[in-house]
Amino acid sequence: MNDTTRNAATGRQLEHVTVFDDPIDLLSYRRDCSVVKPGTAEVAAQPADTDDVVAVIADAVHASRPVYVRGGGTMYAGGANPHAGGTVIDLGRMNRVLELDLARGIVVVEAGIRFADLLDYLEPYGQTVGIVPSTGPAATVGGAVSSHALGTGSPRHQSMGDCVAGLEVVLADGTRLRTGSAACKDAGFFQRYCLGPDLTGLFIGGDAVFGVVTAVCLWLYPLPEVRKTFSFGFPDAHTTGGFLSALQGRELTRNIWYAAGYEGATVRARVLAAEPDFAPAAIPGFGLGVEFGGTEAAIDEDHARLVALAREYGGDEFPAFNAAYFHRLRHDESYWYSFAGYFSRSRCAILMSSLPCDRLGAFVDVIDAQRVRWPDFIWGAASVVCRRGLHGGVLAFYDEQTEWEAMLAAIDAATTALISAGCIPYKSGKIWARHVQACDAYFHVLELIKRGIDPGGLLSPGNLGLDQRRAPAR
Ligand SMILES: Cc1cc2nc3c(=O)[nH]c(=O)nc-3n(C[C@H](O)[C@H](O)[C@H](O)COP(=O)(O)OP(=O)(O)OC[C@H]3O[C@@H](n4cnc5c(N)ncnc54)[C@H](O)[C@@H]3O)c2cc1C
Image 1 (tube, protein in one colour):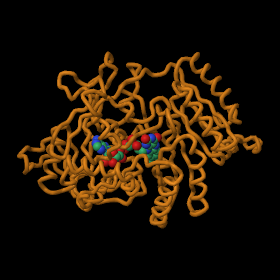
Image 2 (tube, protein in one colour; image 1 turned 30 degrees about the horizontal axis):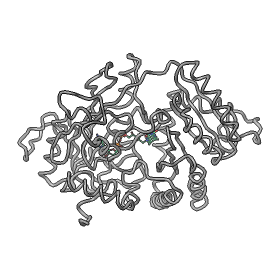
Image 3 (tube, helix red, strand yellow; image 1 turned 45 degrees about the vertical axis):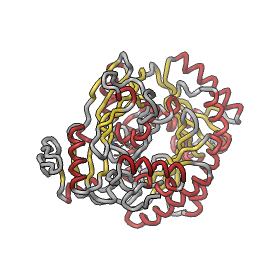
Image 4 (cartoon, helix red, strand yellow; image 1 turned 180 degrees about the vertical axis):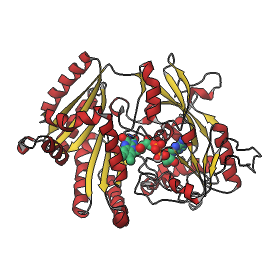
């Protein structure tokens, strides 16, 4: 490790950059939390500010080294894995709040700040941000922007990108770009859509193929006065999908901060573990947990409307699942962290897709088919409710010593089955690469943009299926 390296291309001394080139130090940069195979970096660099990022990129250009970018390394799509070797830029030291403007309703942060630190910072002001992934203690805001985060906030806002007012990004040629209203130097951040097309969107979910996000402007939202959880039960995933379509169509998600669907087996296991005498026949075929946030009166009103709507779809409130599991999941934070830690430590391959509510049944059918085809693995489904549609996660536990190859094949088969069921890649990284490539016109435009702003293919080769070093020009 050394702290001072001269950048031969620019002559700028990387005074504040911590550079790792010892193979032992580089071990922790080999992979994220995904099933995707690791890569081997030659160098890892921890910049202290945006000027450092510019210098590290220039250094990599000079040395003809590809550049990968790492926030918390908690993603399950392999985007941070340095498959082509090269430099990994670790944003962990760029973790400051740059600006809080309550009048404009924005906070500007360095991309490496972790959600837990940002939420702690905002709490005394009675504020929060729109989307928070369940890995908040470790995940960075830049990583979440670059990988389409979801979770808390999705029923109100949809996805991470819907909460971003603008970005600061460093491009492969060293250009330092500010998007949204901040493109006009004197205006600063406050407005996403202005000037012309939305350049912010190019980098949201971009998996570091078009630029390195160095700062993010997020809109602020007041913390809710009260939080309350409820659970519902439905005959199956198909009826739950119909209920969710109606819920979204009537804008009843406005006070819902988090909502997730659970397969019947999960509901049964949680309820019977807590209440062994509970009548199994009374346990529904599909469960839904809902967390409201707002005023007491608004929650009571929306809760009553949800109960009435659930009954229209053959469902009803099912408090036993709330008592056994869902309330604890949302309110007991130590439980919440150990839950995420359990998943990341016990080698769970996670594959995230997005789907319309009317495909929820088809999504669960895909997981059932995986269970039949790969009976040695334990499979699960996670569905997170959005403002429109759902994000659906496939979960599969495996033993990395003996089952890694088989799990890669099973997950690849799951990607194909999900596409056939009408789901689409979400959090693409490398895990969905061939399906991004298969979106002909869309992928063609991605390639054209990539060739225009990163002609040498420096940034994150392989992510989103883009790899200039191999792909011939069309
Ligand atoms: C158990 C478990 C639970 C999870 N739950 C959720 C959840 O509820 N919701 C959710 O959305 N996700 C979830 N995730 C996935 C992941 O934690 C989040 O998406 C998180 O936001 C990723 O942030 P990160 O900083 O760890 O990103 P990383 O893993 O470091 O990077 C993700 C991608 O973004 C790129 N990237 C990172 N930083 C930058 C930057 N500054 N500029 C450009 N590109 C960058 C990387 O190259 C990579 O392609 C979960 C993961 C696990 C293991």
